[in-house]
Length: 115
Length: 112
Image (cartoon, rainbow over all chains, first blue to last red; front, side, top):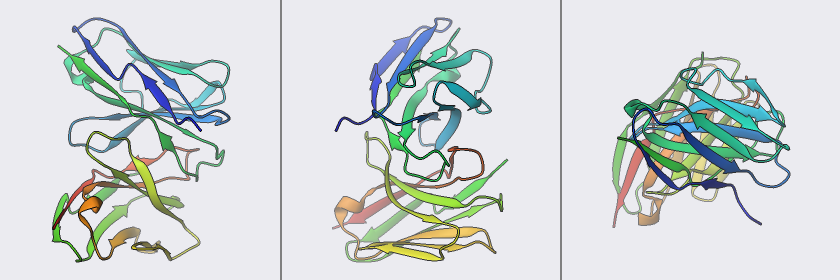
């Protein structure tokens, strides 16, 4: 079946502009996660969704970052007034497991470059 | 919060040798320990995971060991092959819904 998809695959934007990144999880997966991977670094947790609600927003680096999920499926990560330090690969993952101890399936990521 | 340290940051081995990557963590409540492999330009993929009620798990050439008392776990790859070359990430979870805390990664290079 189809895996996790993300769009766009690459995004170049000017400093100060807003960007929206989209994630389509695997059908039926109720849990959805956003991570950020900077060059040569590990994955940094941003936010987690259970259905349409986000019980854990602890990883969002600033109030310029927000995310929503609608219909228990598609999620959008929005970065307002982008800064150069926002440049990274943004990865989305989904999981069937509700207890948080199952495999997370990752999408291919969106490479964001802020110039 | 949880802190995960991963070593070494780079590892170079000859084909057929074994490779071992170690991770330590700080939160004693963590109870899920997955390992992900990320090939260049690709998405991370789970290769093996272990839960806190098990000390060791093996799947063909890869194995993971867990020492909860010492709060460390290791990935073992035997009979390495060039296609094992990738970045390997350890992670911990199970304390906050599905949130995973990742190590910094190990670049494994297997020379033919």
